[in-house]
Image 1 (cartoon, helix red, strand yellow):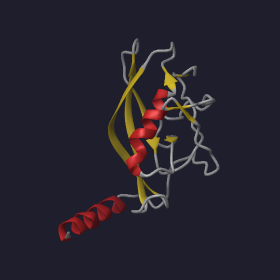
Image 2 (image 1 turned 90 degrees about the horizontal axis):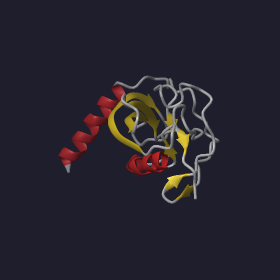
Image 3 (image 1 turned 60 degrees about the vertical axis):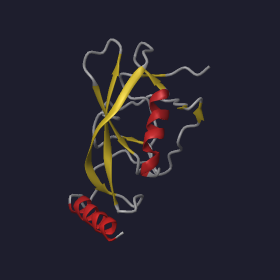
Image 4 (image 1 turned 135 degrees about the horizontal axis):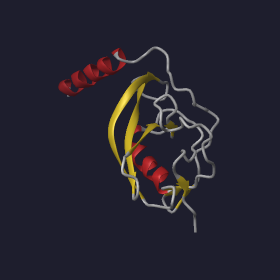
Length: 151
């Protein structure tokens, strides 16, 4: 038990010592409503106007406020609501995290951005998308993807 507390304290210090005192995320919207879920997929209804949406760490896809343990399922819902530009099935995997930032929506007072590699048939170069599970924002379809048609 003492070791667990020690490791938690060390992790907290490391994370918070690297955190900027100000968030650089530009697209947080605390009034945003998470889309409905149908057939284990978000029902995404709008396309992003901004070319940076999802492609830039300062304009991540904000799927929060969710507990960190719910990140995987919410990312899955997100990608199941999208297709490639010609209706291709999407494959994705989390490859890293970056960009610690202060947030009131984490027990440690800090969050990180999840970095996901996305591929689909006909696309030779993987696409990198950034996700934030600590803050809210409008959940949109990023440029280069299409909204999956619901049946």
